Figure 1 (cartoon, one colour):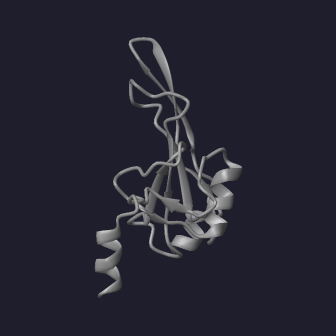
Figure 2 (cartoon, rainbow, N blue to C red; figure 1 turned 120 degrees about the horizontal axis):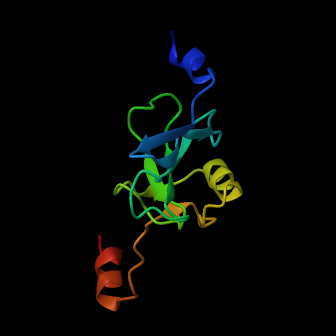
Figure 3 (tube, rainbow, N blue to C red; figure 1 turned 60 degrees about the vertical axis):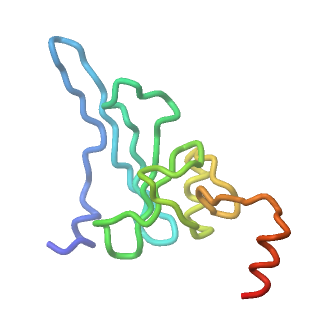
Length: 126
């Protein structure tokens, strides 16, 4: 079965587990459309003991390759899994619609340096 057909199959996104009579809800892997069809997967880290409501994060993939996320971002807008980058405006809109605090610029974890005349002169002389 090709990935396109596979991705259209219904998926289990909520699983209840039980250990010693204590039930835990595991809800992960919600696929949504961004720039491409089903290129964003939202996970809720309910399987970690320190999981809270802001522990959701999203993996943003390219058009066809789902083996490696291009960018991973927490609900707060910070990078996750050290995968930083710039998101497409359609990915930004899709994540913001799901409650993620993504800057409109789409820049995830960009480091802004303070103005420094020496650095500016060095850059101008390149």
